[in-house]
Length: 127
Image 1 (cartoon, rainbow, N blue to C red):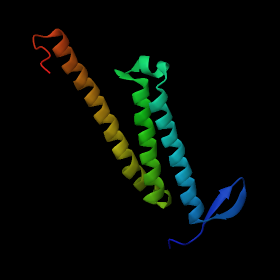
Image 2: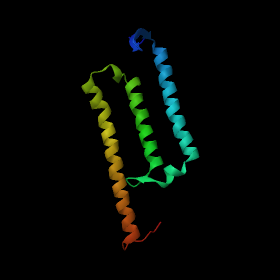
Image 3: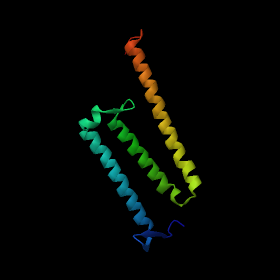
Image 4: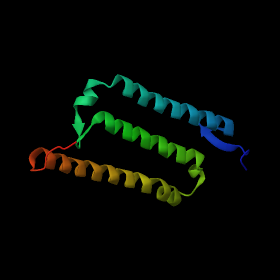
């Protein structure tokens, strides 16, 4: 089964797409996304560093979103979710994405609360 060719419709033409082509496509996509992350990490554009959204810098949001995109694409291709039924795909993929978004939300609001307690409260910075 691993060596079967699957049909792929590309620009209205019916053609075969080998597993080798799929692997190279995944490699190129993941390399491009990783290169964007590395370039943004090295350059650190001022626009993304000084603007915030929901208490976090835009650059950090971009890193989180690109990491989720890579995780989704890895699950999509290497866990063979592309060939599964829609309900199973959604159950497997959207659950961790929802949980990561929820974790980021909780961490941001709790960190903001702790920061405000130390900044404005009676407890002082002791570290």
